[in-house]
Length: 116
Image 1 (cartoon, rainbow, N blue to C red):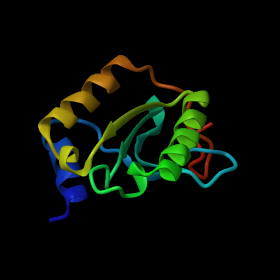
Image 2 (cartoon, helix red, strand yellow):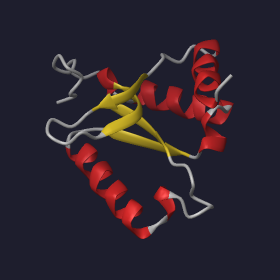
Image 3 (cartoon, one colour):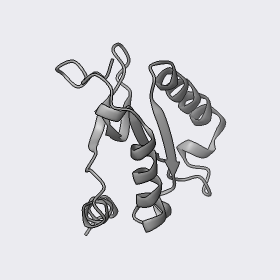
Image 4 (cartoon, helix red, strand yellow):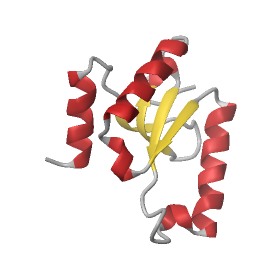
């Protein structure tokens, strides 16, 4: 079973609503959140390669991540960040559950998945 499948199974087992995977949130750019709860404007990004100088650990990747994440914040998104090792853990499930409990529901996104 993949880490993603384990993550979704874990969320289901503890009663956390399942996210939309690869959710396109920006009206112009093709940016996607790894996992999103659009009605709550909550997103979860999994940053791999942080210890191996992968995309999320190099200067150009970090700058691009900042651009994407700042654009999301300006559109009202709350963002949670994890590494692949942290994804399918009870700590992450509890964090998501707490964030969903704190957040307000928003107007559903327009058809096509763009969340503004």
